[in-house]
Image 1: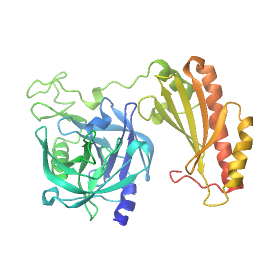
Image 2 (image 1 turned 120 degrees about the vertical axis):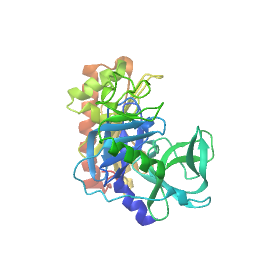
Image 3 (image 1 turned 135 degrees about the vertical axis):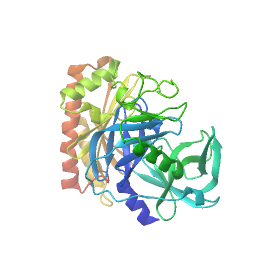
Image 4 (image 1 turned 90 degrees about the vertical axis):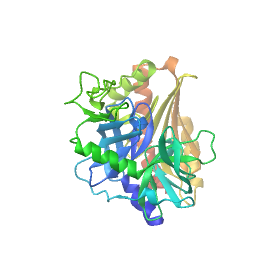
Length: 360
């Protein structure tokens, strides 16, 4: 399955919103990115990022809350390979499957398992039950067979379950795609009550024209507005010339790219702690002592920043409590972190043999 894993590194897309992180996958013929509705819920646009797709905002085109399906507008021209939809009706218990995605916001992972039940019923819907490990962030990613064909959308895992995951069968996805295309490929949502595809042309005020059920189209969803300390942090990032909408990575989390470094910012409301972790290069395979000596000598000179090493990662960190944080202090401290991160990344690579990060 090694070729399949390599191929899907280009097909699987990371999806980020102010509320969550998830996974989607690109369908070339349909020019759509498929994911779960709960991954994009309460957003009209999301951040997409992939090996062959530059990080960008993309509009949500279709929502089906009942089946937990969403379609996202895909970039027009791309060299992403074609994914093949398989036949989920041929699945049998014991068949080998693989789940691929971006768990915990990591850049791509694949887990192998077997089908436990090809027709597991949950809330009046049939799912593929399997034991390939699913973690937060895997939602919306594809479930594959040994031939690299998509069998379903990984939708959820059982809380406290021992590798019990569920995927919506690809047959259901195919039917949803055809209904969406037949309705004109417009911004739309499927009525939770009667199943009618409702768009901006046939919606009756905010109700389904067929049954009167309340419908919220993706285009009618209000744009995200931060509040409290999150608002201050985002204002600070904007002042430092970052496109804030592209930095959001779930609740109170942001990610910045500064040169070759990647900086993750998080705010912990319970403790009041604001953290900035700049992930620089990784340690070389050998002769690591000079790097350790260098970062230990640099630590006393860093003016509020701290070097550390966690596994293979070299991290430059900033910690500040919210009671000391405002626009001016924030700009000063984080501008310092951003500049030093890029500066030290180059030094560690060019002088000490550090390795570029795999997601660089």
